[in-house]
Image (cartoon, rainbow over all chains, first blue to last red):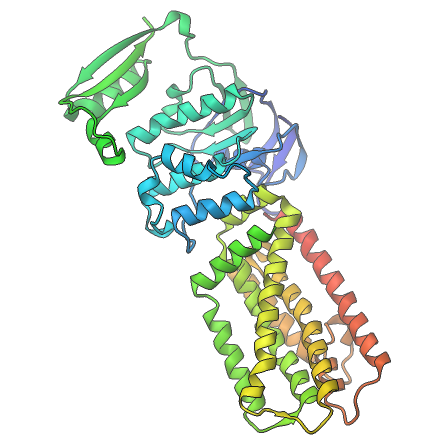
Length: 267
Length: 226
């Protein structure tokens, strides 16, 4: 997919949000869109998805099936989570009759099937947004701040899903302002700033010069430990938290006194 | 497209926003038929004209019920043209239901004088409502949030268009062709004699031409407005 001299503004008298954007995302690539609040990350993603139309310039080579996870899921609708997804599956002409159930289960939404969208927590609503985008295997998956409001278990699902889409030849665009980017190795960075977009090749270390170190930390210190490890430039791959697991999984895990951190450090 | 239409009908009906226009329809029917029985053509002609602003309002409410982000998700799912068409079709469907109710209601409280040209009157009544529905839906669609962007602008478009339909539709108007022939149809139907076929064809052609222009405008405006 290619952006050729794309300009965009919200309205004729508004200032340009994006100017002269030239960028390319190859099939199988993961692109992380970075930038400060209000820089135009969300606008760029909506242009990529085809939700917004550029005022000038062309976006070409967009795959046919597009999954878009909006920054805020539109929960103000009189449907339950299950009903909404089944209706969206029909709207999107999903042929696979098990697609809805599979994603409900995988995103740990089964217990919320009959909950009204308006009554869902922010993170659970975000998962419904994720599910509707994945009902058809997307050629382009656009994730706008997908980690927002998600719990630790759900967070680990995002890199998994991204990897599955890219392995199938799809392109993934994801915006991130919380530094979760570390979970997406090999991603290209697009930095949105001063109304332009600058692309950078992957800066993350490759697998060959990394080792995996498993670390156990006290529950009370887990958050701080993760932050410190990330600050030191390490990639936190997985957080095992029995309590979080128990709250979301029908299978009782073995009790664990300590939250385990799996750490892959480049040393 | 059927799935999207069904989803929008469900969203609108369950959301409870249909209640206000429904009450407005009941009040209007009460006013029209409260005064005693009148010939079918006359009664239905006025009913169609009176329903016009309510149907336009109903359309705006329906199209505005869906959150903007959900409309964009639907647009991605079925494509911009089909998304916009599905919205218009949903509105036409609901407007037709209201029209059927409005045509059946007077029979419940003896509002139709069955002694005068009943068959022709019924047929003309159906025609009057069928001419009003697409025009009202077009006005409502042009006033919807997807086009106007703000509540104030949307309400302004809806009110100004509805007032103009009446004012420019009065006999002796300077530019009657600027608005759909809702008032003209009511006038023709309330005449002493039943209207000529030529007059009806002219009214239908006028309404069709106006609707084509209005929907083309809606389609053009929605191109860049998701």
